[in-house]
Image (tube, rainbow, N blue to C red; front, side):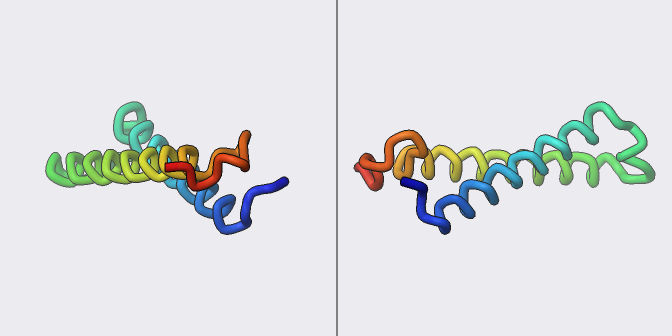
Length: 79
Protein backbone atom coordinates (compact mmCIF):
# COMPACT_ATOMS: atom_id res chain seq x y z
CA UNK A 1 0.00 0.00 0.00
CA UNK A 2 1.32 3.46 -0.89
CA UNK A 3 2.31 6.08 1.61
CA UNK A 4 0.03 8.92 2.51
CA UNK A 5 0.30 11.67 -0.09
CA UNK A 6 1.35 14.24 2.49
CA UNK A 7 4.29 12.04 3.60
CA UNK A 8 5.34 11.57 -0.03
CA UNK A 9 5.18 15.33 -0.56
CA UNK A 10 7.20 16.04 2.60
CA UNK A 11 9.84 13.50 1.60
CA UNK A 12 10.05 14.91 -1.94
CA UNK A 13 10.39 18.45 -0.57
CA UNK A 14 13.16 17.44 1.85
CA UNK A 15 15.04 15.65 -0.95
CA UNK A 16 14.70 18.70 -3.18
CA UNK A 17 16.06 20.94 -0.42
CA UNK A 18 18.99 18.54 0.00
CA UNK A 19 19.70 18.68 -3.74
CA UNK A 20 19.54 22.49 -3.71
CA UNK A 21 21.98 22.66 -0.80
CA UNK A 22 24.42 20.28 -2.49
CA UNK A 23 24.17 22.30 -5.70
CA UNK A 24 25.00 25.45 -3.72
CA UNK A 25 28.08 23.74 -2.28
CA UNK A 26 29.11 22.63 -5.76
CA UNK A 27 28.82 26.18 -7.07
CA UNK A 28 30.66 27.60 -4.08
CA UNK A 29 33.52 25.11 -4.24
CA UNK A 30 34.04 24.33 -7.92
CA UNK A 31 32.54 27.15 -9.95
CA UNK A 32 34.41 30.38 -9.28
CA UNK A 33 32.08 32.08 -11.75
CA UNK A 34 29.23 31.45 -9.31
CA UNK A 35 30.93 33.66 -6.75
CA UNK A 36 31.26 36.73 -8.97
CA UNK A 37 31.72 40.06 -7.19
CA UNK A 38 30.65 38.75 -3.79
CA UNK A 39 32.74 39.53 -0.77
CA UNK A 40 34.25 36.91 1.51
CA UNK A 41 31.46 37.65 3.97
CA UNK A 42 28.83 36.88 1.32
CA UNK A 43 30.69 33.71 0.36
CA UNK A 44 30.70 32.39 3.94
CA UNK A 45 27.11 33.50 4.48
CA UNK A 46 26.09 31.52 1.40
CA UNK A 47 28.11 28.52 2.56
CA UNK A 48 26.52 28.62 6.02
CA UNK A 49 23.05 28.91 4.51
CA UNK A 50 23.74 25.88 2.31
CA UNK A 51 24.99 23.93 5.34
CA UNK A 52 21.91 24.89 7.34
CA UNK A 53 19.64 23.91 4.47
CA UNK A 54 21.45 20.57 4.07
CA UNK A 55 21.33 19.73 7.78
CA UNK A 56 17.60 20.52 8.00
CA UNK A 57 16.85 18.45 4.91
CA UNK A 58 18.90 15.49 6.16
CA UNK A 59 17.15 15.64 9.53
CA UNK A 60 13.73 15.78 7.90
CA UNK A 61 14.53 12.80 5.67
CA UNK A 62 15.83 10.85 8.68
CA UNK A 63 12.66 11.56 10.67
CA UNK A 64 10.37 10.63 7.78
CA UNK A 65 12.32 7.43 7.17
CA UNK A 66 12.15 6.51 10.85
CA UNK A 67 8.45 7.16 11.39
CA UNK A 68 7.11 6.56 7.88
CA UNK A 69 9.33 3.92 6.25
CA UNK A 70 8.70 3.34 2.54
CA UNK A 71 9.57 -0.32 2.74
CA UNK A 72 7.43 -1.24 5.76
CA UNK A 73 4.15 0.68 6.13
CA UNK A 74 3.17 -1.50 9.09
CA UNK A 75 5.86 0.24 11.15
CA UNK A 76 4.40 3.69 10.62
CA UNK A 77 4.69 5.96 13.64
CA UNK A 78 6.80 3.47 15.59
CA UNK A 79 8.38 5.15 18.59
